[in-house]
Image 1 (cartoon, rainbow, N blue to C red):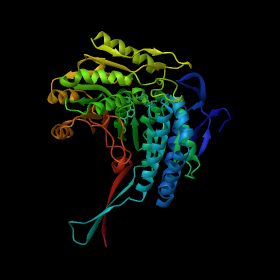
Image 2 (cartoon, rainbow, N blue to C red):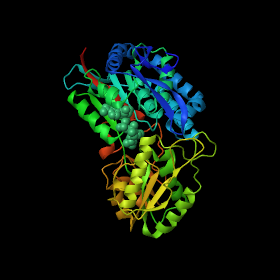
Image 3 (cartoon, rainbow, N blue to C red):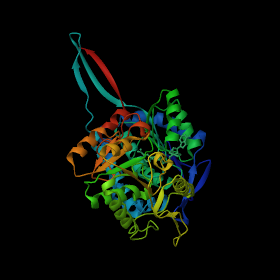
Image 4 (cartoon, rainbow, N blue to C red):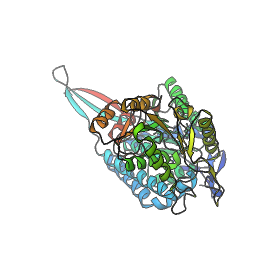
Length: 480
Ligand code: NAD
């Protein structure tokens, strides 16, 4: 490892890149987090070759070894949650509490999959042919390419790396180039666990360079991607040509329905927390608030009152609820969507202004629009911003139809005290996750996570369902 540049990790060695980038905090552009190596084509290919070499040794290292490694990684993430959470908050811009929470959650993913290591069972069956027995067992899929986005720099890596290792695979990990520090810190922990060389590799760099080599590789066996729909389509196309197993988690346009009979205070908390938590930069954020006419005005009034209490500021400052926008490009996109929403007839009733803080960063007051319709651009595109839009509807049926009228389908929520509507919603919402009297954002680590339509492709992530992606089934016939 070089003194001044955080290196890539290939075949058990820290390797300087062909070039490097400066990682700057979006909360304070004078805060330099570090210089991070950038892999080129040759290094990315070397990482893939190393993963091929390292996979079998890891697969054969034994369950106890795999269990211990995953537990140790989880233990360290949790023990260092304050330090690593701070690093995460500095580089991504989310609040310290969110950064610490994400690091803790990342540790929990490793603990969960440590236990899964010991739950790998096969099945047996009699053959239709007398005297023949059959067994089915799962084997590692092989070399897994992992590509992650910037908004959950540690957790997205963790929920992919932990099951990949648990099921005996080797890994080439390419994190988003905006947030290499969290990925590097996780890699550094993994590098001290005595894994066979090549089992885990980190290649940092731009998607169009490092990611492109990975998704077009004929040597990897599976590719798991989280990011935008636009990139997801490229990943699906590239991996399909080579018949590489592929799993995509992408964007969304999640909605929260608030019915006349809702517990109003809870609905307001769900809406504000779901829309603006993580600066609105969550794939599960409630960017559409679909509200029935009877409660609409009071709901809007209370949401605005609640928003006025949200403190925007430097992520590490005490009392701050909303940190910085992730970078200049994202800020520009936010402002562009604000302009489009106004142009198309939305009424900006709160926020949306660019804020000047003590440090030079990208700060925006959360914005609320009313008088929007579901066909407006702001209600179709994923803005990935602290912007929410209220859509007024007449009744539950119209609310449900509006919620489902989108090409995305990750999460959907409803606030109601009616068992009838809650039950109906649970069945008819066309989303992968359904939230009743809860924010659309905020999921557990031991159950499946994923969406429908353009939000997801391939088998589910997380929980026991992850084994579908990270393993391959073998059927063996035995005549005694
Ligand atoms: P992005 O698609 O721009 O980038 C995601 C990753 O893909 C990055 O590592 C990037 O470097 C890489 N990449 C970019 N171009 C590539 C290419 N041509 N070939 C290979 N790799 C390439 O997304 P982003 O802006 O980093 O993240 C935001 C998006 O992620 C949002 O749409 C958000 O909804 C989504 N997201 C989804 C989930 C989920 O689980 N559904 C979770 C978090 C974020």
